[in-house]
Image: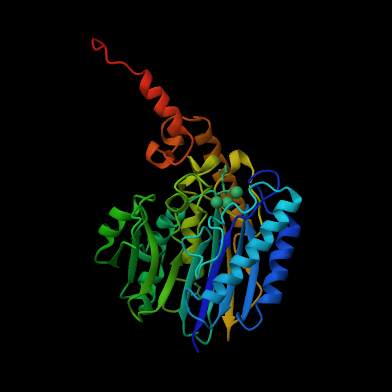
Length: 368
Ligand code: 13P
Ligand code: 13P
Ligand code: MG
Ligand code: MG
Ligand code: MG
Protein backbone atom coordinates (compact mmCIF):
# COMPACT_ATOMS: atom_id res chain seq x y z
CA UNK A 1 0.00 0.00 0.00
CA UNK A 2 1.30 3.47 -0.87
CA UNK A 3 2.34 5.81 1.94
CA UNK A 4 1.51 9.51 1.86
CA UNK A 5 3.54 12.08 3.78
CA UNK A 6 1.83 15.42 4.40
CA UNK A 7 3.26 18.46 6.15
CA UNK A 8 0.61 21.03 7.00
CA UNK A 9 1.95 24.13 8.74
CA UNK A 10 0.43 27.33 10.11
CA UNK A 11 1.13 30.27 12.37
CA UNK A 12 -1.84 30.51 14.73
CA UNK A 13 -0.32 32.72 17.37
CA UNK A 14 2.92 33.26 19.20
CA UNK A 15 4.56 34.64 22.35
CA UNK A 16 6.22 38.04 22.47
CA UNK A 17 5.50 38.97 18.84
CA UNK A 18 6.41 36.60 15.97
CA UNK A 19 8.81 34.56 18.16
CA UNK A 20 7.43 31.11 18.98
CA UNK A 21 4.11 29.43 19.91
CA UNK A 22 3.33 28.76 23.57
CA UNK A 23 3.78 25.32 25.14
CA UNK A 24 0.04 25.16 25.83
CA UNK A 25 -0.85 25.95 22.22
CA UNK A 26 1.46 23.16 21.01
CA UNK A 27 0.04 20.79 23.63
CA UNK A 28 -3.55 21.45 22.55
CA UNK A 29 -2.80 21.02 18.83
CA UNK A 30 -0.98 17.74 19.58
CA UNK A 31 -3.76 16.43 21.83
CA UNK A 32 -6.36 17.28 19.18
CA UNK A 33 -4.52 15.29 16.51
CA UNK A 34 -3.91 12.36 18.89
CA UNK A 35 -7.62 12.16 19.75
CA UNK A 36 -9.27 12.98 16.44
CA UNK A 37 -6.65 11.47 14.14
CA UNK A 38 -7.57 7.86 14.96
CA UNK A 39 -8.66 6.04 11.82
CA UNK A 40 -7.39 8.90 9.61
CA UNK A 41 -3.62 8.95 10.01
CA UNK A 42 -0.97 6.29 10.71
CA UNK A 43 1.42 8.57 12.60
CA UNK A 44 2.30 12.22 13.17
CA UNK A 45 5.08 14.45 14.47
CA UNK A 46 4.56 17.99 15.75
CA UNK A 47 7.25 20.65 15.93
CA UNK A 48 7.64 24.40 15.54
CA UNK A 49 10.09 26.58 13.66
CA UNK A 50 9.92 30.17 14.85
CA UNK A 51 6.22 31.03 15.20
CA UNK A 52 4.99 28.29 12.82
CA UNK A 53 3.72 24.91 13.97
CA UNK A 54 4.09 22.03 11.54
CA UNK A 55 2.17 18.76 11.56
CA UNK A 56 3.98 15.95 9.74
CA UNK A 57 1.52 13.14 8.99
CA UNK A 58 1.87 9.70 7.49
CA UNK A 59 -1.27 8.07 6.14
CA UNK A 60 -2.52 6.00 3.23
CA UNK A 61 -5.18 8.37 1.88
CA UNK A 62 -3.22 10.10 -0.91
CA UNK A 63 -2.44 13.78 -1.50
CA UNK A 64 -5.03 16.47 -0.85
CA UNK A 65 -7.19 14.18 1.29
CA UNK A 66 -10.13 16.05 2.80
CA UNK A 67 -10.06 14.17 6.11
CA UNK A 68 -6.36 14.74 6.70
CA UNK A 69 -6.60 18.41 5.76
CA UNK A 70 -9.65 18.89 7.95
CA UNK A 71 -7.85 17.25 10.88
CA UNK A 72 -5.00 19.77 10.52
CA UNK A 73 -7.36 22.72 10.03
CA UNK A 74 -9.41 21.85 13.11
CA UNK A 75 -6.26 21.28 15.18
CA UNK A 76 -5.12 24.77 14.16
CA UNK A 77 -8.55 26.18 15.04
CA UNK A 78 -8.19 24.57 18.50
CA UNK A 79 -4.72 26.14 18.74
CA UNK A 80 -6.16 29.54 17.76
CA UNK A 81 -8.62 29.26 20.64
CA UNK A 82 -5.71 28.81 23.06
CA UNK A 83 -3.87 31.71 21.40
CA UNK A 84 -6.90 33.93 22.06
CA UNK A 85 -7.24 32.72 25.66
CA UNK A 86 -3.57 33.46 26.31
CA UNK A 87 -3.56 36.76 24.42
CA UNK A 88 -0.88 35.52 22.02
CA UNK A 89 0.16 37.73 19.15
CA UNK A 90 -1.37 36.97 15.73
CA UNK A 91 -3.98 34.45 16.93
CA UNK A 92 -5.20 32.55 13.87
CA UNK A 93 -2.83 34.54 11.63
CA UNK A 94 -2.56 31.94 8.85
CA UNK A 95 -6.19 30.76 8.90
CA UNK A 96 -7.38 33.13 6.20
CA UNK A 97 -10.84 31.63 5.62
CA UNK A 98 -13.69 31.43 8.10
CA UNK A 99 -14.56 27.81 7.59
CA UNK A 100 -12.92 24.71 6.16
CA UNK A 101 -13.88 23.78 2.61
CA UNK A 102 -12.42 20.44 1.57
CA UNK A 103 -8.70 21.24 1.34
CA UNK A 104 -6.40 23.66 3.20
CA UNK A 105 -4.68 24.72 -0.04
CA UNK A 106 -5.54 28.33 -0.73
CA UNK A 107 -6.79 28.84 2.85
CA UNK A 108 -3.52 30.03 4.43
CA UNK A 109 -1.62 27.01 5.83
CA UNK A 110 1.41 25.75 3.87
CA UNK A 111 1.22 22.21 2.51
CA UNK A 112 3.86 19.82 1.12
CA UNK A 113 2.78 16.27 0.29
CA UNK A 114 3.98 13.20 -1.58
CA UNK A 115 2.74 9.66 -2.15
CA UNK A 116 5.05 6.71 -2.85
CA UNK A 117 5.59 2.99 -2.35
CA UNK A 118 7.92 2.68 0.66
CA UNK A 119 11.40 1.36 -0.08
CA UNK A 120 12.65 -1.35 2.35
CA UNK A 121 14.52 1.53 3.99
CA UNK A 122 12.81 4.91 3.61
CA UNK A 123 14.87 7.85 4.88
CA UNK A 124 13.48 11.34 4.29
CA UNK A 125 13.99 14.91 5.45
CA UNK A 126 11.43 17.33 6.86
CA UNK A 127 12.28 21.01 6.33
CA UNK A 128 10.51 24.02 7.85
CA UNK A 129 11.63 27.62 7.41
CA UNK A 130 10.40 30.79 9.10
CA UNK A 131 10.58 34.49 8.10
CA UNK A 132 11.06 33.68 4.43
CA UNK A 133 9.23 32.34 1.36
CA UNK A 134 9.30 29.17 -0.82
CA UNK A 135 12.02 30.58 -3.10
CA UNK A 136 14.43 30.12 -0.17
CA UNK A 137 14.76 26.47 -1.21
CA UNK A 138 15.56 27.26 -4.87
CA UNK A 139 19.33 27.54 -4.56
CA UNK A 140 19.87 24.62 -2.13
CA UNK A 141 17.75 22.34 -4.34
CA UNK A 142 19.46 23.47 -7.52
CA UNK A 143 22.89 22.73 -6.03
CA UNK A 144 21.90 19.41 -4.41
CA UNK A 145 20.21 18.01 -7.54
CA UNK A 146 22.34 19.40 -10.41
CA UNK A 147 25.83 20.28 -9.21
CA UNK A 148 28.58 17.69 -8.59
CA UNK A 149 30.39 20.38 -6.56
CA UNK A 150 27.71 19.78 -3.90
CA UNK A 151 26.36 16.36 -4.88
CA UNK A 152 29.25 13.96 -5.34
CA UNK A 153 26.74 11.20 -6.09
CA UNK A 154 26.13 12.77 -9.51
CA UNK A 155 29.66 11.52 -10.30
CA UNK A 156 29.92 8.48 -8.01
CA UNK A 157 26.49 6.84 -8.01
CA UNK A 158 25.21 5.07 -11.15
CA UNK A 159 21.69 5.20 -9.65
CA UNK A 160 21.62 9.00 -10.23
CA UNK A 161 23.32 9.03 -13.64
CA UNK A 162 20.26 10.16 -15.59
CA UNK A 163 19.71 13.22 -13.43
CA UNK A 164 16.47 14.77 -12.21
CA UNK A 165 13.25 16.26 -13.56
CA UNK A 166 12.35 19.62 -12.00
CA UNK A 167 8.77 20.91 -11.81
CA UNK A 168 8.85 24.69 -11.30
CA UNK A 169 5.86 26.89 -10.53
CA UNK A 170 5.18 30.52 -11.45
CA UNK A 171 3.84 31.66 -8.07
CA UNK A 172 2.82 35.12 -9.28
CA UNK A 173 0.16 33.54 -11.51
CA UNK A 174 -3.11 33.50 -9.59
CA UNK A 175 -5.63 31.82 -11.94
CA UNK A 176 -4.30 28.28 -11.44
CA UNK A 177 -1.07 26.28 -11.18
CA UNK A 178 1.25 27.54 -13.95
CA UNK A 179 4.12 25.03 -14.14
CA UNK A 180 7.07 24.07 -16.33
CA UNK A 181 9.00 20.75 -16.39
CA UNK A 182 12.73 20.87 -17.06
CA UNK A 183 15.35 18.12 -17.07
CA UNK A 184 18.76 18.26 -15.42
CA UNK A 185 21.48 18.01 -16.59
CA UNK A 186 20.52 18.98 -20.20
CA UNK A 187 18.44 22.01 -19.23
CA UNK A 188 20.42 23.11 -16.19
CA UNK A 189 20.99 26.61 -17.59
CA UNK A 190 17.23 27.05 -18.15
CA UNK A 191 16.51 25.84 -14.61
CA UNK A 192 19.03 28.39 -13.30
CA UNK A 193 17.54 31.16 -15.45
CA UNK A 194 14.17 30.64 -13.75
CA UNK A 195 15.31 29.78 -10.23
CA UNK A 196 17.38 32.97 -9.94
CA UNK A 197 14.05 34.77 -9.46
CA UNK A 198 13.09 33.44 -6.01
CA UNK A 199 9.92 35.51 -5.74
CA UNK A 200 8.41 34.37 -9.03
CA UNK A 201 9.61 30.85 -9.88
CA UNK A 202 9.94 28.17 -7.22
CA UNK A 203 10.67 24.47 -7.19
CA UNK A 204 7.42 22.58 -6.63
CA UNK A 205 8.78 19.04 -6.96
CA UNK A 206 11.74 17.01 -8.22
CA UNK A 207 11.74 13.43 -9.62
CA UNK A 208 14.50 10.87 -10.27
CA UNK A 209 14.93 10.28 -14.00
CA UNK A 210 16.39 6.81 -13.27
CA UNK A 211 13.19 5.56 -11.65
CA UNK A 212 10.55 8.29 -12.09
CA UNK A 213 10.15 8.39 -8.28
CA UNK A 214 9.44 11.61 -6.41
CA UNK A 215 12.18 13.00 -4.20
CA UNK A 216 11.09 16.57 -3.38
CA UNK A 217 7.84 18.37 -2.62
CA UNK A 218 7.80 22.07 -1.58
CA UNK A 219 4.92 24.20 -0.33
CA UNK A 220 4.27 26.96 -2.85
CA UNK A 221 1.79 29.15 -0.92
CA UNK A 222 1.93 32.91 -1.45
CA UNK A 223 -0.21 34.34 1.30
CA UNK A 224 -0.70 37.73 -0.34
CA UNK A 225 -2.21 35.99 -3.37
CA UNK A 226 -4.89 34.62 -1.02
CA UNK A 227 -5.37 37.58 1.32
CA UNK A 228 -4.65 40.42 -1.15
CA UNK A 229 -2.64 42.11 1.60
CA UNK A 230 0.33 41.39 3.87
CA UNK A 231 -0.60 38.71 6.40
CA UNK A 232 2.85 37.49 7.38
CA UNK A 233 5.49 35.64 5.43
CA UNK A 234 4.85 32.35 3.61
CA UNK A 235 7.33 30.34 5.72
CA UNK A 236 7.74 27.27 3.49
CA UNK A 237 7.93 23.55 4.33
CA UNK A 238 9.49 20.78 2.25
CA UNK A 239 9.83 16.99 2.08
CA UNK A 240 12.93 15.34 0.54
CA UNK A 241 13.36 11.58 0.13
CA UNK A 242 17.08 10.77 0.29
CA UNK A 243 19.70 8.05 -0.41
CA UNK A 244 19.68 5.31 -3.03
CA UNK A 245 18.41 6.79 -6.28
CA UNK A 246 18.17 10.24 -4.61
CA UNK A 247 20.95 12.47 -3.21
CA UNK A 248 22.44 11.42 0.15
CA UNK A 249 21.29 13.39 3.20
CA UNK A 250 24.65 15.15 3.46
CA UNK A 251 24.42 16.23 -0.18
CA UNK A 252 20.99 17.77 0.36
CA UNK A 253 22.28 19.59 3.47
CA UNK A 254 25.59 20.80 2.02
CA UNK A 255 24.20 23.97 0.34
CA UNK A 256 22.80 25.22 3.68
CA UNK A 257 26.40 25.96 4.65
CA UNK A 258 26.22 28.99 2.32
CA UNK A 259 23.69 30.93 4.41
CA UNK A 260 22.45 32.46 1.16
CA UNK A 261 20.46 35.70 1.21
CA UNK A 262 16.69 35.21 1.00
CA UNK A 263 13.56 37.36 1.16
CA UNK A 264 11.86 37.81 4.55
CA UNK A 265 13.31 38.92 7.90
CA UNK A 266 11.49 41.85 9.61
CA UNK A 267 7.92 42.40 8.32
CA UNK A 268 8.70 40.03 5.45
CA UNK A 269 10.20 43.02 3.67
CA UNK A 270 13.95 42.55 3.85
CA UNK A 271 16.86 40.45 2.71
CA UNK A 272 18.70 38.22 5.17
CA UNK A 273 20.89 35.11 5.21
CA UNK A 274 19.18 31.76 5.84
CA UNK A 275 20.38 30.28 9.14
CA UNK A 276 20.16 26.49 9.74
CA UNK A 277 18.75 26.02 13.27
CA UNK A 278 17.85 23.24 15.71
CA UNK A 279 14.36 21.81 16.18
CA UNK A 280 11.89 24.08 18.01
CA UNK A 281 14.08 27.19 17.72
CA UNK A 282 12.55 30.62 18.15
CA UNK A 283 13.17 33.91 16.34
CA UNK A 284 15.07 36.92 17.59
CA UNK A 285 17.28 39.51 15.83
CA UNK A 286 15.17 41.90 13.67
CA UNK A 287 12.41 39.25 13.62
CA UNK A 288 14.93 36.89 12.15
CA UNK A 289 17.29 36.07 10.76
CA UNK A 290 15.35 33.81 8.37
CA UNK A 291 15.74 30.27 9.74
CA UNK A 292 15.47 26.72 8.45
CA UNK A 293 15.13 23.54 10.50
CA UNK A 294 15.68 20.03 9.11
CA UNK A 295 14.69 16.73 10.73
CA UNK A 296 15.71 13.34 9.36
CA UNK A 297 13.26 10.44 9.74
CA UNK A 298 12.74 6.92 8.50
CA UNK A 299 9.22 5.71 7.85
CA UNK A 300 8.20 2.03 7.73
CA UNK A 301 4.64 0.82 7.19
CA UNK A 302 3.49 4.35 7.96
CA UNK A 303 5.29 4.61 11.32
CA UNK A 304 7.97 7.23 11.97
CA UNK A 305 11.19 6.82 13.89
CA UNK A 306 12.10 9.64 16.24
CA UNK A 307 13.63 12.62 14.40
CA UNK A 308 17.36 13.15 13.91
CA UNK A 309 17.87 16.91 14.32
CA UNK A 310 20.45 17.34 11.57
CA UNK A 311 21.46 20.95 12.24
CA UNK A 312 22.09 20.09 15.92
CA UNK A 313 25.78 19.40 15.38
CA UNK A 314 29.01 21.31 16.13
CA UNK A 315 29.63 21.91 12.41
CA UNK A 316 26.48 24.02 12.14
CA UNK A 317 27.49 26.14 15.17
CA UNK A 318 30.32 27.45 13.00
CA UNK A 319 27.87 28.13 10.13
CA UNK A 320 25.46 29.89 12.50
CA UNK A 321 28.29 32.22 13.55
CA UNK A 322 29.09 33.00 9.92
CA UNK A 323 25.42 33.59 9.11
CA UNK A 324 25.08 35.89 12.14
CA UNK A 325 27.93 37.91 10.76
CA UNK A 326 26.31 38.10 7.31
CA UNK A 327 23.03 39.18 8.91
CA UNK A 328 24.79 41.91 10.89
CA UNK A 329 26.62 43.17 7.80
CA UNK A 330 23.40 43.39 5.79
CA UNK A 331 21.42 45.00 8.62
CA UNK A 332 24.05 47.73 8.95
CA UNK A 333 22.68 49.33 5.77
CA UNK A 334 19.12 49.45 7.13
CA UNK A 335 16.56 50.29 4.47
CA UNK A 336 19.02 50.97 1.69
CA UNK A 337 19.12 49.11 -1.62
CA UNK A 338 19.70 45.35 -1.40
CA UNK A 339 18.85 45.25 2.33
CA UNK A 340 15.13 45.69 1.57
CA UNK A 341 12.92 43.97 -0.98
CA UNK A 342 11.83 45.87 -4.11
CA UNK A 343 8.52 47.74 -4.12
CA UNK A 344 6.82 44.94 -6.11
CA UNK A 345 7.23 42.69 -3.04
CA UNK A 346 6.05 45.37 -0.59
CA UNK A 347 2.97 46.48 -2.49
CA UNK A 348 0.74 44.29 -0.31
CA UNK A 349 1.74 46.26 2.79
CA UNK A 350 1.04 49.69 4.29
CA UNK A 351 3.64 51.45 2.16
CA UNK A 352 1.07 51.62 -0.68
CA UNK A 353 -0.91 54.33 1.15
CA UNK A 354 2.21 56.33 1.89
CA UNK A 355 3.31 56.19 -1.77
CA UNK A 356 -0.12 57.40 -2.93
CA UNK A 357 0.12 60.47 -0.70
CA UNK A 358 3.71 61.20 -1.68
CA UNK A 359 2.84 60.75 -5.36
CA UNK A 360 0.43 63.70 -5.16
CA UNK A 361 3.16 65.91 -3.77
CA UNK A 362 5.46 65.36 -6.75
CA UNK A 363 5.69 68.23 -9.26
CA UNK A 364 7.36 68.38 -12.65
CA UNK A 365 9.44 71.56 -12.86
CA UNK A 366 8.05 74.00 -15.41
CA UNK A 367 4.58 72.43 -15.32
CA UNK A 368 1.77 73.80 -13.15
P1 13P B 1 28.00 4.60 5.16
O1 13P B 1 29.15 3.66 4.85
O2 13P B 1 28.18 5.29 6.51
O3 13P B 1 26.67 3.96 5.02
O4 13P B 1 28.06 5.81 4.10
C1 13P B 1 27.67 5.63 2.79
C2 13P B 1 27.42 6.89 2.05
O5 13P B 1 27.14 6.84 0.88
C3 13P B 1 27.49 8.22 2.72
O6 13P B 1 27.11 9.23 1.86
P1 13P C 1 5.47 35.53 10.22
O1 13P C 1 4.95 35.23 8.84
O2 13P C 1 6.48 34.53 10.65
O3 13P C 1 4.34 35.69 11.19
O4 13P C 1 6.27 36.90 10.16
C1 13P C 1 5.59 38.08 10.12
C2 13P C 1 6.43 39.30 10.30
O5 13P C 1 6.06 40.32 9.78
C3 13P C 1 7.65 39.28 11.10
O6 13P C 1 8.22 40.56 11.27
MG1 MG D 1 3.66 35.33 12.98
MG1 MG E 1 6.23 32.49 10.69
MG1 MG F 1 4.18 33.45 8.21
